[in-house]
Amino acid sequence: MGLCDMLREKGIQCFGPSKAAAIIEGSKAFSKELMQKYGIPTAEYKVFSDADAAAGYAAHHSLPVVVKADGLALGKGVIIAKTHDEAIEAVNDMMRGGKFGRSGATVVVEEFLTGPEVSVLAFTDGKTVVPLLSSMDHKRAGDGDTGLNTGGMGVIAPNPFYTKAAEEQVMQSIILPTLNAMNAEGRTFRGCLYFGLMLTPNGPRVIEYNCRFGDPETQAVLPLVEGDLLEIMIATQAGTLDKCEIRLSDKSSCCLVLASGGYPEKYEKGKLITFDGDVEADCAVCIFHAGTKLGTPDGSEFVTSGGRVLGITAVRDTLEEAVRAAYAAAERVHFDGKYSRSDIGLSALRESRLKNG
Image: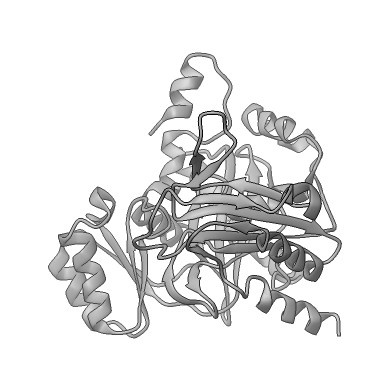
């Protein structure tokens, strides 16, 4: 909405992209067209502003097919349709039913990609770019990547599927070309640019961009950044990121999301949240509040107020230890309808064991 532009006009320093640069997340149609124009690998797609045309195209697309609302939809605007009826229903919900308001007036219909997903957060001042440790989000609501897409049910970092070879390929074919493309379009990006990637059999592909820290990836990745975050933020805006030392931990982290039953669809609010003792201190974890609010004026109690209620992050020497610690802490948090996936980090642990023999 241009908040950073307004603040800068008043002489107030802030961390984040301009409105012109933020369109890379604000419009999926823009980002897809940017990638096509500059040869950045992504899924094959078409953009539609006419519901009949979109439904007709989706009805004959190979399956599965992905239908995306063009604008922001709180992480819920992506439907992976396994049948043509589901694809048509998604188009109708977005374009005719107004499910996501103006965000769904235009839709992107694209091919379904397969392979491990990788999230990469990167600091950039428009000239220098510094990727942070990779992570793996778990978007589907149910175990085994079943159910509806959510804003994220849990994250591990670093992502064992993101090898050194993949990292170098992504830097050369996706990250640097994206920054150069935004510069060429007069939309220089300064801040944190999020790359949602798929490591397909044909190489890395961009699934989406975010113009900010991704949630819940940030809760897993930022605890692995050593040093002063404020210094990094200032450097991205001052154009001095090349002179800023960013050190990354050699530990692993896991962020487990505790959600309200029924999320990402209907769920109840106002459920009292209780903790068995001082969970953060006792379990050496950090609990991030998301869908909560104060239940009493003195702040002694919290109640649920959203779909994703809490994120519990554990940092340990190994990924296995981090996952185990996050789940152990979660058992000491209680609210009516509490739900979490039971397999966060499972595929990553299997891959780590394979790599380590």
